[in-house]
Image (cartoon, rainbow, N blue to C red):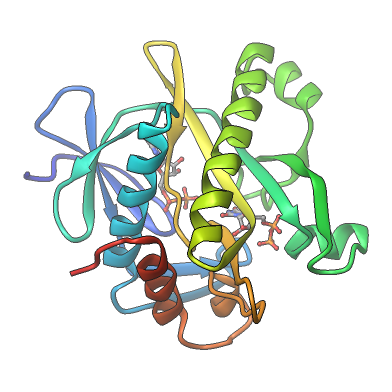
Length: 237
Ligand code: ADP
Ligand code: UDP
């Protein structure tokens, strides 16, 4: 399908109008960023790998009853999605301590978190995505109390589904970020789920298999993404 007008070019994806009303083309690029865009690189095949990885995960979630924006794969690096009005918040769930939780609260990396920790962040590159709570979201009109409840419930439903999926592939789902939006007032999962936006550790060796390989200069970033995909059944070629 022909790309229409470019609506938005983010740090990793570009969003275009499509030929179908209410649908957008999401193009996954090889651009990779970390630390609020301060670390940048091009990683060969990242766009293709994340596009196909995300398509697989979205299909799994959809068939388990999670409403998502995903329609279909269009090409190696493009997907067709429902156009959403995105809510400017990021929903993070943590099953093990890592990343900012370790840095901010001094919890040892790898500590099991039961029940899982849920956090909201305000999506703002200029402010460095600060952590926020329900009260900020309601007062500043970023989402309603009902949408907050729906986002929490859906994010935790996703956790139950994906913990199992990755466990079957010998992987620990450490944490992940989701974004939601609305279409005709109906809330659904948007954006992407790929190793760019989650942490996955090998269950036996605890080796990092996600974007931390890029953040921490561990090398073989896309090789690790592909390995994760192979273990859960994603077909890349
Ligand atoms: P960022 O904006 O953080 O740099 P990306 O490069 O991944 O991130 O850009 C993709 C953008 O598209 C994000 O801002 C995301 O909120 C937005 N988006 C994701 N899904 C949809 C959708 N279904 N409709 C409209 N916008 C979307
Ligand atoms: N995350 C993301 N985009 C963001 C912030 C976080 O995809 O803008 C993901 C990140 O990859 C991790 C989880 O959300 O899987 C929790 O991130 P954390 O708060 O630990 O931040 P970080 O250590 O990456 O700064």
